[in-house]
Image (cartoon, rainbow over all chains, first blue to last red):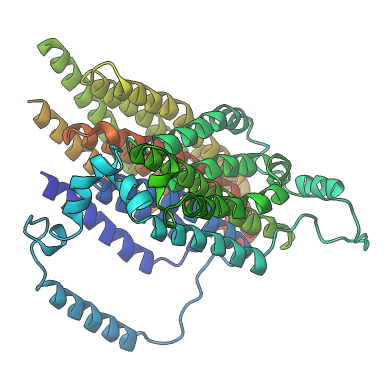
Length: 341
Length: 108
Length: 96
């Protein structure tokens, strides 16, 4: 039964990928990419990898689609017809794909308990984690405690993505001044932006529903943040969901109103704050006598120390991811004013 | 207990039936606005039936609360999205079949 | 008995998802594509809930909530940015 579901989902995935190749309309391509992410997340759910499915659904199907649509608004909607014949690239792809498939023939059977991957570090984590960390969700204990340094690296990568986007695009606060008034204050600049970008104000039903739904989404983001110890979730997913709530507000009411709710200045402070919190917890552990990110020394009882440390760093990850996603969205969406729509 | 199982199975079957008819209606109806109607009405009904069927199989606890939350959320957002889509199509200039015939006749 | 019912429901929802996908692949107008994607998203929510019950792990319901959310926000984003396409493209949406 599970194999049948996997097979059907993978078949739909392949069909979607093939369809994307032969479509010229980039708008449809973006929507099919959203479906592709949905299908990947469903496959992860079928493979029992719940945290990965969570992240794939929220980032791949949500944020990526919104950002790609924002990019489409700045560029063309139809793909240019390629001038050259693609026989050589096709040959290269077929050869590489064939070599990869030939390589997988040597691999051990899928989900066999005798596989080497199940015999080195994984049994130690699975057996020792209840005593050492004491959290029901072992993915969180591996991510946040056993491999906490890797997660710090991931958070820094997310932070540097925001730095890259901000240095390349920046967030435009005001329209191009037509009469040369270069020194408008921020207030009038934001009022200009809200006039020129009405969002979806004409849809009254959407406005009412958005106002109803956004508090629920924020509540759910808080739930995911703190429930990550017991079920699927954690800092990353919670940050993305909280950013999605504010992105919904900015989409429906216009980017100017979005700036008034969460201004880019606040985001500029929040983005490094999460990373600082994470690294700060590590330094605190060093100051209290342990090694970097050794949570055992944070409290009198090592298990309690682990809990405190994990909660603190998950908060750091959540804050940084939230600020970064919202920063990138602001950077992309505020560019549309330049095109003169 | 067996009554609950039968009722749950009945609701699940009805839900899948509604979903199937809605999906087939996506292909068979002649005009976009009729297709929106078919998709959105059967979507809400199928969601209610399937989630109610699953609700009858779970005991009182966090699972039932989450199912109820999903049900309420789908009930609120799915018709809103269909309404917004139909309104956007209208603003984009899409004409329904009688209006299309009328405009074509008027041009003769 | 319950497992058989749930398995049948999963297969049924997979068929519906396949049909919605076919509509998203080949659509007369661009709005039909958006409709197909929306229906695919809603059915995936129900699919995840059913799979969770089938495999006895109701933790999956968190993912179903996220899907419903992301589907809605994706639809709002599509409708919002669709207004920014050039006028030539919107002319081609008349029953193309």
